[in-house]
Length: 295
View 1: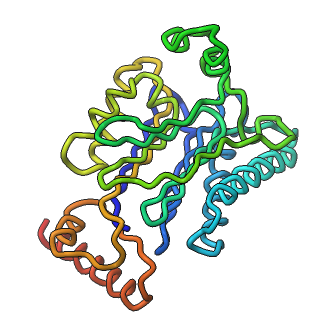
View 2: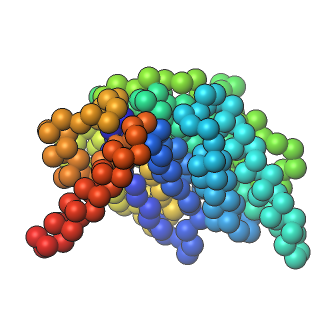
């Protein structure tokens, strides 16, 4: 599997940054994880980091490829919830940190996701959001009941109130929403983001930006900057993590793909033998060294 990653993180008009995210890569795939620490409670950034650390530990210690992705992601979110609660109870005095959580596991071009809270996952195809997680929020609940419109959600006084989270003073486990595995097409883009991005930016605008030619990392950073400008001077922390699928092939990469990989932030995941992986790592170091010499 050949893919390209992009990420962005901006402070916005806030004093602290409580967002945390990471792409955890192995030869068998990649696990994307993102958490938005809840600003209304103490140490939201710690809760978000606990989520990232829990996801990383579980994935790196799991039998890979993961045979039951939905169950695996559900377990990560539930374990992270208990870890956040335990952390809060051990403080003096006890606190109730909380975070949203969204995960996506991609193996051989098949994506499976899960989430709690209002951080979102999108799957864009040709610039269109063909999948999007449904927020666990008060305004989304009102919308589903037909009590408010989509437009009214944007200005509702309780638009930032989530109905489910990790930690946050909740002792009982949350019920993560689990997506069914989806086979991605080449050039499809997965986007995980906090409400600092999707709040001020329409889905169609995000899709249009993702269709621009160029490095995905540059595109994602331009998207985050635009979201920050649109919401100024009330911009929240903005975090986004994206993956563009380039090929579902194994370790065999043709010359054109190899040249493209050198130019962009493209990662290769395969279940090839350790020798091939070691050679690829050495070649990557050599290419980086050559780029430094050319500067």
